[in-house]
Amino acid sequence: MENQGRNGKRLVPGPFQGHLTPMLQLATVLKSKGFSITIAHTQFNSPDSSAHPDFTFLCIPDGLSEEEVRNPDLIGIVLRLNVNCESSFRECLNQGTNHMESGDKICCIIYDAVVYFSEAIARDLKIPSIALHTSNAATTIVRPILLQLKAQGHIPVPDSMLQVPVPLHQPLRFKDLPLSNFGSLDYFLEGIVLMYNIRSSSAIIFNTIHCLEEPPLAQLHQRYQVPIFPIGPLHKLAPTSDVSLLQEDTGCITWLDKQTHNSVIYVSLGSIAHLNQDQLSEMAWGLANSKEPFLWVIRPGSILGSEWIDSMDEGFKECVKDRGCIVKWAPQKKVLAHDAVGGFWSHCGWNSTLESICEGVPMICQPCFGDQKVNARYLTHEWKVGLELEGEIERGTVERAVRTLMKEKEGEEMRQRVLDLKHKVEVSIGDGGYSSHYLSELVELLTSL
Ligand code: UDX
Image (cartoon, rainbow, N blue to C red):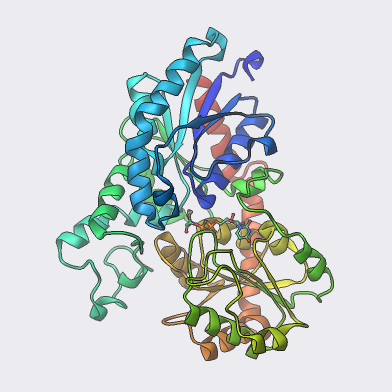
């Protein structure tokens, strides 16, 4: 707050759920430290300002057409936003600064690395800037080498190389490289160059934790000449922050209340991934045949060729009516913290990964694209708290994986390991822990700007 001598921060989130979430959580944390906050967001996927009465919201005209918004070409949208928003954001800031008293001056722009246009404007206006990476440190280490690998002819990855370890980047194999499923490879690599070049930024914030990523964080400290702040998990530092773009169905908590301890497998593939009708059917029958209770989030529009679950087999619905609950969007953090939830079948988005670890819930890992593949490999082969679901989704494999996680010794061992990790994370955010230490350093830096 200005009267405490801590001047304004402009925070520019990336316009997708997995990006808005950590930025709004960071905003909540900084607000609690006395900083005044303005969230400068695109029209596309704009956050609900009424859920955050303590922040000022500034909408940046983004010039996206209805067609572009409907189009699932995420890389195209990101590149376009970065071109379209540059002048409109500059204008917003100029108008804003003209009306400000000197005490309200913007002292820093914290921007999601995917909306790198913010850095260019901050540099021109001589405002310090800090980048926030919403994926983990391991992804940030490996993404820039994709260009080299492409130049060496290894990308697109030929089938013969899929299982080959990436030199110097263990435990990753070529199939785990964080490539996108969207748009053209050249566009994607163009985006990588722009996102991972921090240019004039004074520091980088990561929603990660020292105990999970010590070696990649050490490499990042060497690569970048600016301070690195791994202050995660942000959702634990800002547990009250309401960040959902979609309406949460809280009825599933009432349903969970009726289930027994650790009996339910929670299934969700995040905010972006899509399934085709065959994948939906194989997932459904794998769950049904496992005979385990499940809570499944199916986002409207996420099944190619149907609005929601209208195309689902009536036989399946009948078979699982007493032990399955399907919702459009769940209060995921509450679900994972619920006593009845014993496993999480996930796409391994970084937020979901952190949320699961923080509640001590072991996972079935079905990464769909990008950093999810890196996260899945770390979950299964580094932290050993997840089972890998390899290849095409097939009901027999699904059934076996669900049973292994929920009922067998291997699943129980993963549960023990993830509970150990949960404890380490709690230590990290407690007094004297690494995340607390880095957060204090970040606050010190922000205060000095
Ligand atoms: C993608 C990437 O994969 C991720 O790693 C990147 O950092 C951001 O973009 P996304 O599909 O959004 O992610 O997944 P994830 O990062 O897991 O974020 C999803 C968020 O939505 C989580 O915070 C989760 O709690 C929330 N969610 C999901 C709900 O609140 N309810 C649901 O029903 C499903």
